[in-house]
Image 1 (cartoon, rainbow, N blue to C red):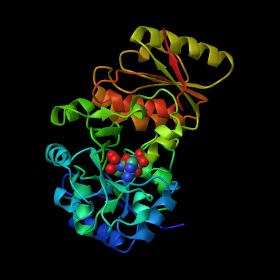
Image 2 (image 1 turned 60 degrees about the vertical axis):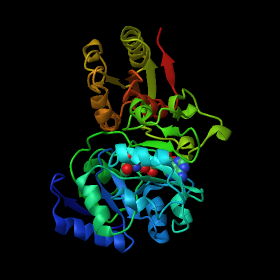
Image 3 (image 1 turned 90 degrees about the horizontal axis):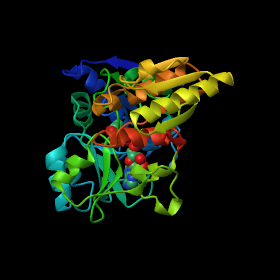
Length: 353
Ligand code: TXA
Ligand code: MG
């Protein structure tokens, strides 16, 4: 077991001495968890093979699922990739720093472990003072997958990171709760038209305003597991965001969803099961179960995204047997929310009529 050092910082104005200390750990090949605007990341020097291998091990992440490489300015992309297509330049100008990850053909300086042997590398510039300060002070690109144990919901606070990774990493920088709450949108720019491989903090609608011809990979809206030959991103084939409890996602209109969840609650409780419900502000009073929590208002999808992973962890911590979750609209941030909920349920989806 490692001794994990906790560094609390003011996210608007991080103490340079603490950032320097964490950067030194990165330079020495160590592992530092840090906040970004989406979720917490677990960082290592992206160009140091041993550091990246340690990163996979700390997260218990399969070696075939590459992390995202984080940079502190768009200019750092050029030495990591073979070419920057015009559409990528447009997207970088419009959305960086921010929750958008772009896939490029990588240059020879990026080691194989960092890309899981693929010919592409995923890069993003986060919009968070702590993340940017850490990357700059480290003087290297930072490989950073979400700072959770593989399969668990992504961490939106330092407390979540601590629960999963205390004793497995060198430093956790605590910069408070993250703002967006779901991970970055991943777009493949090595194909034309470009394709969204993972929906996230940058909405599909916003992308289309900049590059009109962009497609959604079938996985983004999938309601069941995709066959292996359809997979374009390693992350698509691994189990994700899974609480210990069985999760059932109920999709439909507000009325049909509420009625179906009431029915399911009744039958599960009759069987003696402990039931948790993930509802919305508008519907939570309609339920009587062991644990009822609200994601937020159905009319505020960004707020629902912000609360999503925290609530999955909180309800699971109550040791319920089953979690009944309400589906919401797939517009805007709802696309990322529904993608995560479907994965969290293992595609255990009920269409309420
Ligand atoms: O918001 C985020 O993106 C967070 C924060 C920490 O920046 N990071 C994050 O990283 O979510 P991670 O490693 O948990 O998810 C990266 C996703 C995975 O689904 C992975 O399969 C995909 O990006 N990915 C990475 N490199 C890829 C590549 N070369 N080709 C296709 N997919 C790739
Ligand atoms: Mg992740």
